[in-house]
Image (tube, rainbow, N blue to C red; front, side):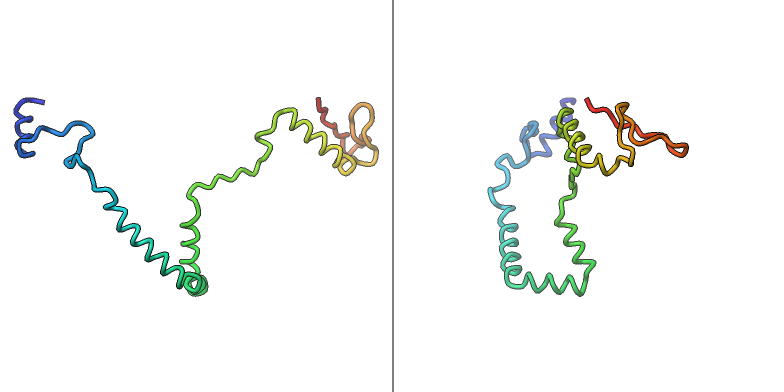
Length: 139
């Protein structure tokens, strides 16, 4: 920056030195609570109105304007909903192996055909239509 531009900046600021990084035109900042007073007053009035009329208004909107009702419901929900339905992610290999063994103990008779597993680990007799299925080996 040249000396001429500094002088120009100072003249625009009434002779005051240029602002330093992180400093604004109001170094004292906004008075505490100035912005929140309006918000607090508004929320207090809304709460009072809701306590008096809330349930009946919700019912009226739900029946008369279901699209608006659904918009309100959607606006209340979090924008990013992380639903983890796979509760196997946090299991160790040993825990997964134990779970599989438990499932085979319970479901084994239900999934095995009439000629159950022999010593070679094959389930049922091999036919021309379908080869015998292998039972997975769990270590």
